[in-house]
Amino acid sequence: METIHGTDVSRYTYRVTWSVEDEAFVATCAEFPSLSWLADSQAAALQGLVDLVADTVADLVSQGEDVPEPLSERSYSGKFNLRVGEGLHRRLAIRAAEEHLSLNQYVVQRLSDAS
Image (cartoon, rainbow, N blue to C red; front, side, top):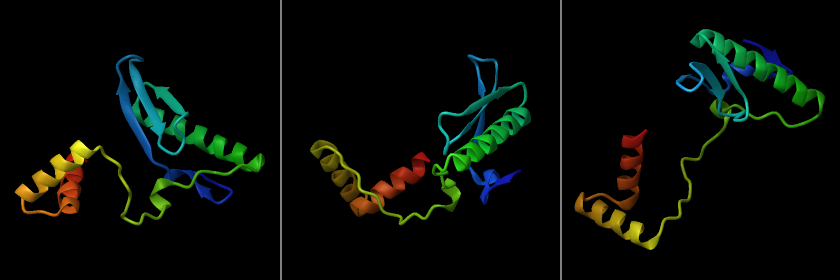
């Protein structure tokens, strides 16, 4: 894969899935949600998108614009705030208590189960 002005485009978050509508594989990149690439094979879809991302990064650099940092290289604190309605908060607190867990432990467990 290619490095453009210090950005290794292979470190971005790529996904290739089958598109029933297009009857082709579609590659997407989380850091560039407006870009995608269709192809007859997974490998071709991925390579097409990687090339497109490399071109896009080169264009951003040449225009003096910010280049998105790969998700894999970002720092995460492990904390985020989540606002839920009063009713949901109550139901979650009750379920956590029923399972003898703190609300935080209960929510982390549920999120882990969902991922």
